[in-house]
Amino acid sequence: MQHLVFVYGTLRHGERNHHLLANSQCLGNFTTPPVYSLYDLGAYPAVTEGHSAIFGEVYLIDDQTLKQLDIIEDVPVTYRREQIETTFGLAWVYIYQDISQLDVLIASGDWSQKV
Image 1 (cartoon, rainbow, N blue to C red):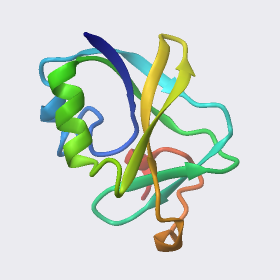
Image 2: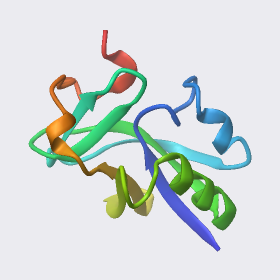
Image 3: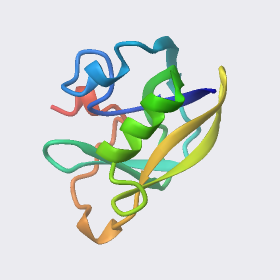
Image 4: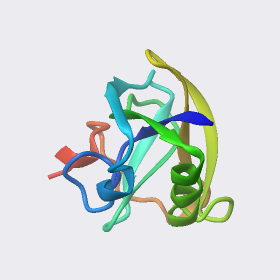
């Protein structure tokens, strides 16, 4: 089965976990409606409910890739998976669960441009 996934951090092109999407098709860039917040956790980002738009990429992935992503995202402990509407269709997005750990907001909504 095929799935869409919206990635906004280490899975994006040029980032350290992008290799997990090596056999997946990038459909393009997407910016969410302003209903999220993006935080910097150092080694990776976290998205929660909020009031900002988040920039990322949408990929077409298979069942095995989705299982791998769930493992590295520690679903359902650290992140949970939700579906959002994108210009490419409904896509999974990983939402961070423990908001008490968040303090460095990335106001731009783009983790790759956090500096």
